[in-house]
Length: 317
Image (cartoon, rainbow, N blue to C red; front, side, top):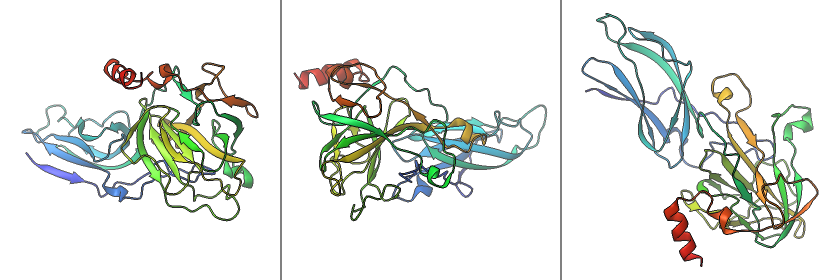
């Protein structure tokens, strides 16, 4: 059996996220080695492609076969696949017809953080990402391109939660800490459009990602790879330039499959999350309105297994 590692033609798709300017695939480590593709041949010399994902989160792969011989062109084209952590089989190029020649191919590939197909869970309720019983006013963010008359994504949706400097930020939904940016000092006037923002990115069970931005350097209470439940503390807000009128930026998004196929310029799709508050259930937050946070157990445990829920209830009685 022959074994071959293919990573020369790999590249990372890096989208632009308006005011954050934080990439969905951003990480301080060498991203070229996060995911690789290998090929193994069976006794009939038919190649099977495998992904090897060295991280704890999924990556969407795009394989574009520019030339194949003695086999059928993979369909659809380009071929999309979600590489979950570890080694996973992608596809096999089987010999076609009565041909006796070896299967040959040429292809390029790229990868992007997330899944190639995301089914957003519409029945999930989010917690306000603030301390329980605290009241916050809701504002929104605008796409930075609007400043220069650049049209942004139609579904662009980012919420601002009013907080004080050094207030604790809490997870709005259960997930895995997939990225932390903890390197910028917030000095001088607020840099609304600056890419220099500390943030946390949380991977949710349905392959959406929650972003929490404007966090204080060195204040993170989690690390990459940690599992967090809704209501767990993750960091402190950095708003020393506006101690009593700071703002936490929060958004939920996922990989746009049309972008992977080359049919869209928007790399991500945005989700309008529904929230549980002290007085209301499953609501879309309204701009300019005040809401009080509530962390009930049914929301914290809504995505847990029966065993996890039992363990959590026993621990938190």
